[in-house]
Picture 1 (cartoon, helix red, strand yellow):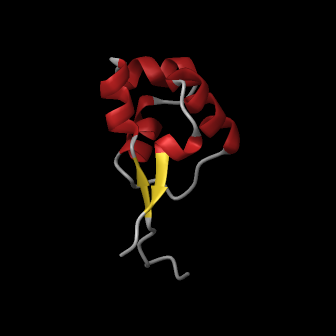
Picture 2 (tube, helix red, strand yellow):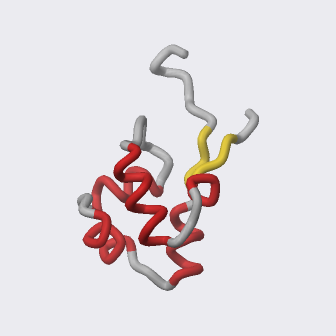
Length: 74
């Protein structure tokens, strides 16, 4: 896949944050990433995510990776 092609992964972090009443800043502190990096993920602009970060997000949001990410068909 060439770098200019858009990926087909959707991030549902905004929905999970709203459902759990957690702010992006609070989650960033709990997970150990900067709010800016978490915002990049939330807005679908991230090019990668570490499994340790994904695990920490799932732990803090009490969810599974599939609750956080999904594949969309373009």
